[in-house]
Length: 332
Image 1 (cartoon, one colour):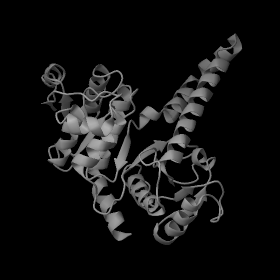
Image 2 (cartoon, rainbow, N blue to C red; image 1 turned 90 degrees about the vertical axis):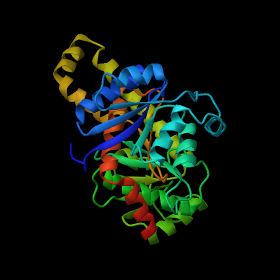
Image 3 (tube, rainbow, N blue to C red; image 1 turned 120 degrees about the vertical axis):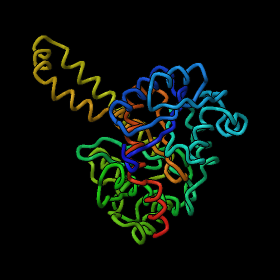
């Protein structure tokens, strides 16, 4: 195993609606795909210890508490110091793990990673980035829900962090950055958008100006920047539309014997399309701006999403994502 390629990620065994079985299946798949990956599996003793005994590159880290999906995030993080989410974040802070994945309580993940790992120097607010499929290459959207209210300077930082993620994880050498707005002209939109546009035009490499909602699935840019309220609405709308369209398409293909025959012929192409549009192909949304790699999975994450999240996490670690973000912000 190469020292350079070796990656250790902490994984919350009890995060998600279908954990721990789904999480363990995902970990198993990730380990099989990446011989240089090592996992610190965090959770109750009766779950993590037996599983670790069956895997050469898994170490059990016992956590006696669990933060439920319906608990108040910050209060739970402060009260449950031995919860799987807090322990996972602590492993990164202590240097035992290079990143942490959980599909548990999103608010608790944000609170724990921010409080325990701390923020990269100069970061005002960490942001959730999510990778969306488009007609071309995937696009990074941020903030996807961490900050409902933002200032113009926050959006500038999001732009730098999103561009660093696109370079490191998606392999985009010179990311095109767009500001989500209701029109292309610099004078369009809210005061937040107008002021952010002026700042980004001056200080964000690769900034191409405003983009509209329809430009996101078209893949006009590589990074789309907005506040967390707008970003979350855009994200949920795209997820909903994707689900509806795929469902309607499937229904149409099965609606008659002739259509079923056509579906059989098109099956390989349709499988590729489904995989391309499947959000589980990227697995998790990174919380950018914290001083460590934090990967937030959806509560409904399947085993494929867990495996994908660990693959993305390993890529981010090997590409030194956190350092790249720090360098980008220091140079801005």
